[in-house]
Length: 502
Image 1 (tube, helix red, strand yellow):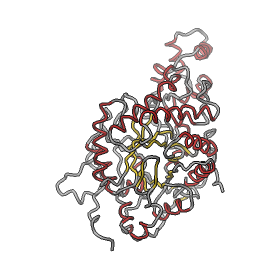
Image 2 (cartoon, helix red, strand yellow; image 1 turned 180 degrees about the horizontal axis):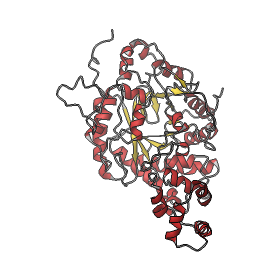
Image 3 (cartoon, one colour; image 1 turned 60 degrees about the vertical axis):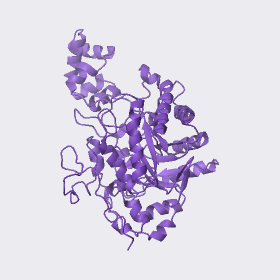
Image 4 (tube, one colour; image 1 turned 120 degrees about the vertical axis):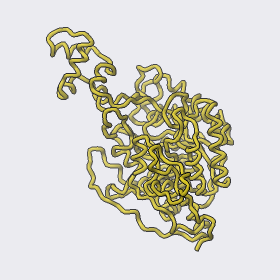
């Protein structure tokens, strides 16, 4: 059975407000006997349970990409809850400025990352595997003031000059041409600029993998395999149990896999062409780290954009990845620039603000299908295709996971092999441990309003509205706080974690 496809962007489904469903929590015995709390083999690595905290960017690194005490606190707090796998945030493979995001593009980052893995192992009592998600991304500019766009950003073409000269009745200098274009009303501007130029004006300039006129973009297939391989080697040196290649959402590798990739150099167009660089990257990584280090990938089961990749593309990618020897495949959805909301002047486009962003992080304000387990059918179809091709590669699903009952049903029905939860784990980092101890009634349950995503969008330190103003355990004002001092940066400690279940 195949789920209904995501409605096209032109469709406007009725908005329905859903509430987080009530649930029945298992006893400790039921949890121990469950699929979710059973072990799973991920290539060379064995996870104690099938519980998984996927990568989330908390904006706690230094501006130079180094690990900070706040980074250690963030991941240590998740490790307190004993997930089977904890994936560290998207970490840049290039040695270039990228703000307060972790980086691994040089050996100087390894000591801090090594301290991170030690923290997770210690806080998780050695029960949690820790993977590093590694990615590449292309440049994006903030939406410019129109005057600045025309004076500095727009690359003048003869068509611009001819259009401006025709309106003026004389030949104009380039300076005059830019000024004339800037003065045009919107209706005329739409005739003077190309669709790409209009997009750059309205959303900010964004480099794409199809921009073969740019030497550094044309050279990506020659550069990226070694960059990813070096990053994976550093991750191994830092004590990680594996890496997750970030092939999802709005970033470079996802763009190569996308049906929108029309490169004509052998790295686009056909599905084999689109898979070529992702497979070459994996081969380089595997050669660098060997067979005893876990290497998987996160990619999209559906781009959820017009003319984008669908589940048919995703199943083909998954079979190719399984055949190549990926140790796990983690499935996401959407999160693309193509349909994002227009940013304010001076701000950058954010790929989780449009319809595809909702599909990636569905909220209680949804359509009739609702947000809970919304994307599990993608993992199901991918897993079926991989199994039919003769491979046992574990499939990870995520998206609106709010309870033990949901996760166990997904595993029982064969839709996935591992069930991940990001926002619920942020709401209560101890929730896996509480369930395992038969204390599920004490779980702090996510509201799925995307308060956390709103902070991420503004590049603010990510927290949860359910605990970030709770200072009841902060008698000596020792709890690390946000830069404005108003929010705590880690969830309060579960004080009763040693008490036996009632």
